[in-house]
Image 1 (cartoon, rainbow over the protein chains, first blue to last red):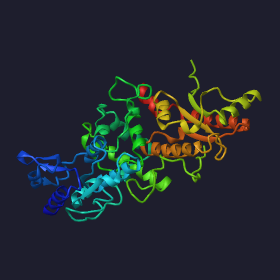
Image 2 (cartoon, each protein chain N blue to C red; image 1 turned 180 degrees about the horizontal axis):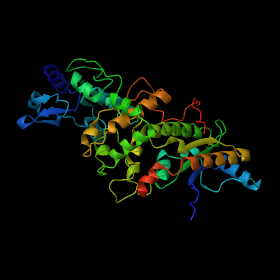
Image 3 (cartoon, rainbow over the protein chains, first blue to last red; image 1 turned 135 degrees about the vertical axis):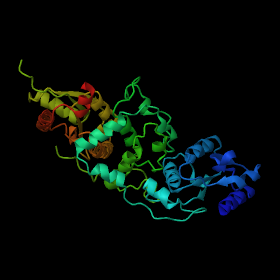
Image 4 (spheres, each protein chain N blue to C red; image 1 turned 30 degrees about the vertical axis):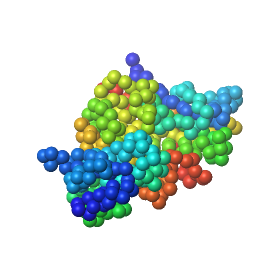
Length: 270
Length: 142
């Protein structure tokens, strides 16, 4: 933790950043997201890396800060997922990479196992040590192995619990649209719970090639819908069909952002 | 009373420049095809959002047929490049969730392919008839 605090302290002291978005140990030991600034240096002593079950969409906070203060540079604490999110947000023109400084965290093994995370560390590591990534999601494989009817019944049983709170969307660091088609009355029935069975599918489509697998949606969901499985599969399909690695700085633009110069896919036979 | 044969409702999204004109050609050529299809004319098949397709299924469509120009013939040059990306992705996602991907079909039909249009609609209608009412619809009824 000392290394991380020292880095933040130096960044603030040298005026490299306008502030640092991270976590603070609040009274009673609770970790809370916090914005550290130069004029309150003593707070940096309480800057922490929270345990895995206390995560907040810091990328989302950064987006609103960056929009309000476009000239300023901010530092942000990132896990592997948060950094993938930043990469994706750069690609979608939501953030300027020159105005973001990373304070990187590597997740412990139990967190990586819980998330089935393929990349549980940031490109700079200021806290923690690299652990073994989980390259294949058992949760996805389990559904893939099912017969279609069985998979349908399972998904339907989950979707029927939805209370349409929009928590998944609201917590999502990648949901930056000003208008949401899930709120369009012509496209999504209003005034009924559970919502249309396609609700989660629509979100899954929008998340493909965009979801950075932070898992906040699933943790926010009051109905315990396994959203993460759905979005993980979406990303797998995007990789399979278009060779696109979501959140990787190396894999170019999202396939949904440009038409392409050639078509390699073929229509499925009837 | 004998039970009536299942008559599926099929929704077609046809691009203005190719498939819709192909349907027109089928019409003026007096070619017969099943009347189960309801057509929505769109300016380009690339404007059809996966959300529109899912909405159609939610509202009780038993099948959705999307028709666009052949690759390279798009009136907007590359609009249909996006169509195939979206539809292939959606078909695979529907398969994963068990939402019957075979009820969604994409076919490139040019303005000159009246007979191909008829054949496609006929085959698709036959296929959907065999499949019966969609699972989503059964949920609604239950």
